[in-house]
Amino acid sequence: MSTATPDSIAPAHGKLGVLIPGLGAVSTTFIAGVEAVRRGLAKPIGSLTQMGTIRLGKRTDKRTPLIQEFLPLAGLDDLVFGGWDIYTDNCFQAASHAQVLDKDLLAQVRPRLESIQPMSAVFDKRFVKRLDGPNVKSAPTKWDLAQLLREDIRAFKAKHHCDRLVMIWCASTEAFRAPGDVHATLEAFEAGLKSNHPDIAPSMVYAYAALREGVPFANGAPNLTTDTGALLALSRQNQAPICGKDFKTGQTLMKTILAPGLKARMLGLSGWFSTNILGNRDGEVLDDPESFKTKEESKLSVLEHILQPDLYPDLYRDFYHKVRINYYPPRGDNKEGWDNIDIFGWLGYPMQIKVDFLCRDSILAAPIVLDLVLLLDLAQRTPSLRGLGIQEWLSFYFKSPITPPGLYPEHDLFIQSMKLKNTMRHIRGEEMITHLGLEYYD
Ligand SMILES: NC(=O)c1ccc[n+]([C@@H]2O[C@H](COP(=O)([O-])OP(=O)(O)OC[C@H]3O[C@@H](n4cnc5c(N)ncnc54)[C@H](O)[C@@H]3O)[C@@H](O)[C@H]2O)c1
Image 1: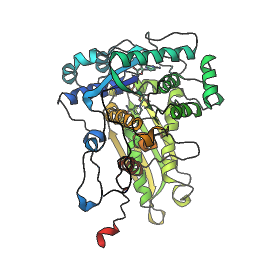
Image 2: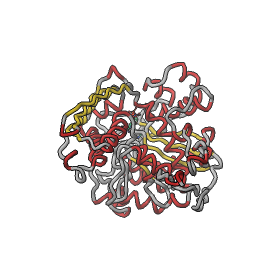
Image 3: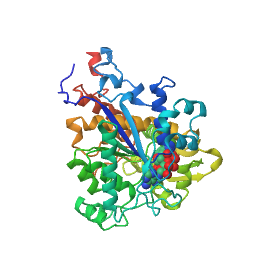
Image 4: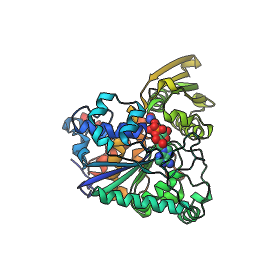
C-alpha cells in the first residue's frame, strides 16, 4: 500500500554514455568488470544496484524486489564507455598496467577494452606534481580548454549514438585548494576561466564542461571540484545533478561502520590511529604532501561528524585522530590498512580494538562507480531530483559527502543507507520505512 504519488521518471531508453576523466586502476577495473559481467564471466559483487533488494511495505507483505527491477535503471548492455587520460595507453593497456585483474580475465574482454582510447586530457602539473604525460590538450585559456572538452563530449555522444551521458571523475587526487572568490559564483568562475585563474583546477574545467552540456557529474576523488557555489548553481540551472566526494572504500568504509556502533552503545573514544600502505599510482600521487592534504581533509572529517563531540563531551571530547598513507610499491593495488582504536567503557575503563584490513582498493571502488553512474542517470530522469543539484541521497558512496552550505553531512553508513533506500521508495510512491513496527502488535 502506498500513499505517496510516484514520480514520472522518464524511461531509460537508448544508450547511456559513461565519460571518465582518468583511465587508471579504478576506471579500468570498473569497465573491464562490467564487460565481464555482461558476458556472464563474473558477478557484480559489491554493487547495490545489481545485487541489492529493497523492502516495500510491512515486513508481513513479503515485497522485496531487486532494486534493478524496482527502479527504471539503465541496463549494463546499454553502457558505452569513453574517457580522458594524460597517457596514451588504451583501456586494456591501462588495466594491464594497473595489475588489479588477472591476465586471464583481461584477455577475455581484451577487444572491447582495446577499443577505448583516451581523449587528450586537460592537465596542470601544479595540481598533480608526481605525474606527467604526453596526451594533454593545449589552448590559450582554461575557457578554451573547457570548450574543447565540450566538443569531445558532443562528438562522443554523436559517434556512439548515446541518448544520455554521465561523467564520473576517476582521475588523480589534485592538490588541496580552499574555496575562494573565483569559485563563489558562476560569473566569477567563468571570468576566472577566461583569465586563467590559478585556483581553477582541471577537475573543475571537466565538471564545468559536463554541466554546461547538461551532463550529470560525480566526483570520486576528494578534490573541491563541484563543491563550490559556482558549479552548484550551474548544476541546478541546467538540471544536471552532481554528487561527491571521494569514493568510500577501505579504511573509511570500516570507520563509518564501526564508529556509529560505538556511539550507539555510548562507548567513549580516546584515540583512533589509522595507517595504510599502498603501492599503486594513486599511492604515488598521494605521496605528495599537497595531494595528501586533500585526502587527509576528506578522511579526518568523518569521525567528528559521526561522534558529535558537542553533544557527547564525556565520550568524544578531544579524541586523537590520525590518518597516514604510506606509498609502498610492492603492494600495488592491494592495500593494507591498520586501525588502532582506543575506546573506554563503564566507569572509564580503557579497551582497544585492532583492525587489519587487507583490501583491494579498486575492487572496492569499481561497484561504487557502477552504482553512481546508474543512479545519477536515474536522478536526471526523475523530476523531483534533477533540479536539486546535489544528490545527498548518494552520500552512502562517499567519504566526504557534499551538502548545501550550512547543512552538515551524514557520515554514518546506516543513516546513509536508510536515506538512499527511502529516496528510492519516495520516487516510486512507496511509503517510507521508519522501523517503528507498532502496527504488528495491534
Ligand atoms: N581505489 C579506491 O579505493 C579509491 C577510493 C577513493 C578515491 N579514489 C580516488 O579515485 C581516483 C582514481 O584512483 P586510481 O587508483 O584509479 O588512480 P590511478 O592513478 O590508477 O588513475 C588515475 C588516472 O588519472 C589520470 N589523470 C590524472 N590527472 C588527469 C587529468 N587531469 N585528466 C585526465 N586524466 C588524469 C592519471 O594519468 C591516471 O591514469 C584517485 O583520485 C583516488 O584518490 C580511489
